[in-house]
Image (cartoon, rainbow, N blue to C red; front, top):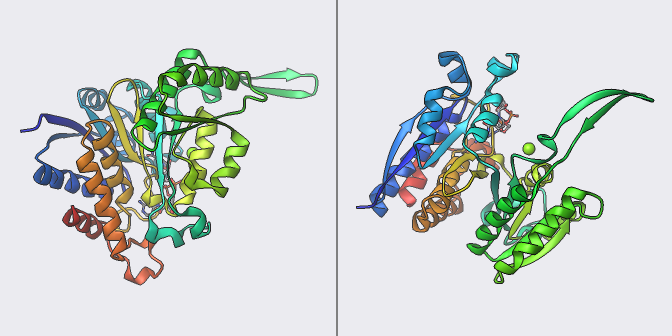
Length: 357
Ligand code: NAI
Ligand code: MG
């Protein structure tokens, strides 16, 4: 009997509960097929927590997350809370939970499924074989540096500061080397070392650490060039590691290689094996409660959890293979269906994936 793994499950708002329900079915199937054991504990977070607990991130939710081995999150937010003051907005909860759980990196795979190549705006032959992972630093850089306004000689001046220390760079770079070691062993470190001091430090740290991972092939790519190469030769990338703002932009660019936001998974990691796994998309209030959402992003996020936090590669591979099979057989939710009249519901997609595992 496998050790029981504790998973905190946060459904959230909008389509969150619908897509998380399908991932939970997959979890049960993995227990049956592979003999693993999961214990789930549900927690309130985001808009629903604002309504019921008066805060987006209740103490109880934080306690449940901290006592778990991993967190599965749906999505939070919606128009109902948009005009709330900052401390009563779901997005404030998102920043707080990452900080409280010490999650300093965000990993986003961008995989082009063969049968969905037509869904992208790029030519199929350019996309052929694209399977990359963007590792973005999440808690440092210009988003978190000191920011202020002052009166200058030419009117108002606005200042944003970008600060990175060696420790922050080293921990994310090491994580990226580890991830690359479990993949195709290629790492592209993206910076702007020709103009930015933080980028020069970044590059020094990468070069200092690289000899410890002799099996990994490292290339330094300037961020503007990387933006071009992602469109020109996406299949040549394996792991891309970069600082917060560059990662924000490049991960969205990479996401668009694959077609639909309903297919994109993510992991947020800190020290050790703990991680928070969630689809890239939001709560999609426009389609909530109608069984229209694509649950694949959430199901693939669960696969990432199995691989990265638990080391259950067999289960992760099986889920990813099942998703590919179901798509190959022509099943589509409406976001990825060419002919919308043939689209299937959220739960039907979940059931098909479950049966394929
Ligand atoms: P969104 O990702 O929720 O939706 C954008 C578009 O994609 C919509 O047309 C939606 O119907 C569609 N879409 C999203 N996920 C889908 C899925 N699984 N299947 C099929 N179609 C899907 O982004 P939007 O509209 O900008 O934000 C809506 C709310 O979600 C806002 O309150 C926002 O703050 C929140 N949000 C939450 C995130 C999180 O929980 N991590 C991330 C992004 C946004
Ligand atoms: Mg973004």
